[in-house]
Image (cartoon, rainbow, N blue to C red):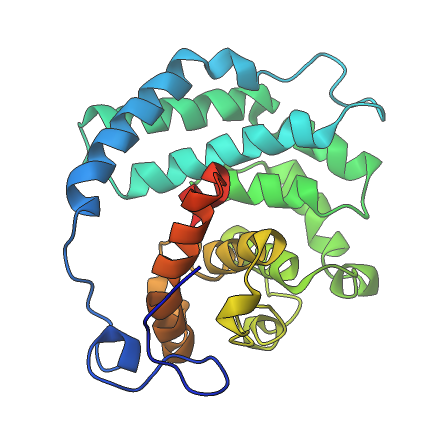
Length: 260
C-alpha cells in the first residue's frame, strides 16, 4: 500500500503541523458524520430482526459447546448495545433498539445466573468475567457472580494468566467496569502491544491489525474514554489509519476494515 505521510526513520509520525504532528487532537468533521448514522440505523435494524441468532443453546454449559459461536457473540451484542446506548440520544430509535438488545442478551444469560455457573465450572477462565463486565458496565449486576469473582480475581493465577498484551488490556478494562482493583497497570501492558510499541507501519497485516483495534477498544472502554490514548499513539494512528484502511479495502478484508 502507498502513503505520503511524513515519518521519521523509526516509522513514527512526522512532526509537521496538524494532527499528525501532535499539535491538536481535535477531530475535523468529515464524510463519516453523514454516512455513519445511516449505517448504524440499518445495522441495528438488521440485528434486531435477527436477534434470535444470538439465542444460547440448551447445552451451553456442556464442555463441547463452542464458546466462540455462542457466548462470545452474545457478549459482543451486549457490549455494542451498551456502547450505542451511551452515544445516542434518548428517545431515538437507535437508542431504544440498542437498549432492547442489551436486555435480550441479559435474559439469555438468566440475568447473570448462567455466567455464575460458568465461573464455578471454569474458575481459571477469563471469558465469563469479561462477558459479565459488558453487562456490569451498563448497570446490570448479579450479586452471586461478584461474590465468587472477588476472591478469584485476587489469586496469583489470575494476575499471572499468560495471554497476549491486548487481551490483558481487555481483562483490565473488565476489572474497571466491575469496579475492582486492576491486577496490573494498563500503561505497562500497553507498552508491550504492537500498537503501543509504535511498530513500523509497513509491518501491518491481519493479526496485528486486529490486535491494534482491540488495544484501542479495551484502552478506551470501547470509545467511551478516548483520552486514555497517549498522544504519541494518537498521532501515529491518525497518520497511518487511512493507508491501512485503504489496503484492507483493496484486499477485501471487510471485517478488519470495519474495525479500523
